[in-house]
Length: 150
Image 1 (cartoon, rainbow, N blue to C red):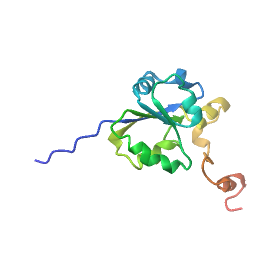
Image 2: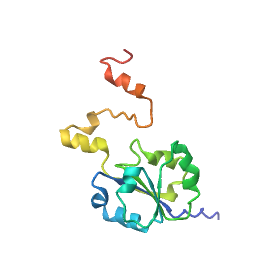
Image 3: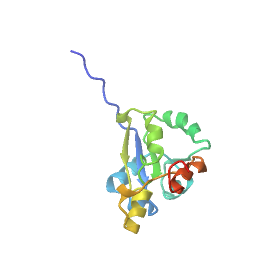
Image 4: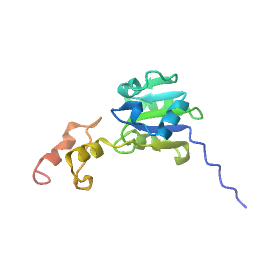
């Protein structure tokens, strides 16, 4: 009989955080954050946890420089703070390319689209989402013209 390979313990927590900071986090997200020895995130995210004793590391530029350094912390208790849902145009999918599913856990928060749609009374399924964060501005052009290809 062949034994299954052990599932790695999640060492990385991807936590979505909103503009309300720590106060808006769920109990499970607050617990994971409290246990972290290392916290990665954008400067504004790190500023939301000023009293945390973990080592705080802002994302470098280019962002790709962060991947080897973050992966070198495998086995440590590491937390990544991201805006809203880390897998909605976020850092989650970028990091997941380098990890196995058992290495990380995710606690998403509402995305910016979710919050905007709720405020405006729009149905999310009727919205087209486009991100320009870290991407060429020209990506928006097809979404601004009345007919495709114009």
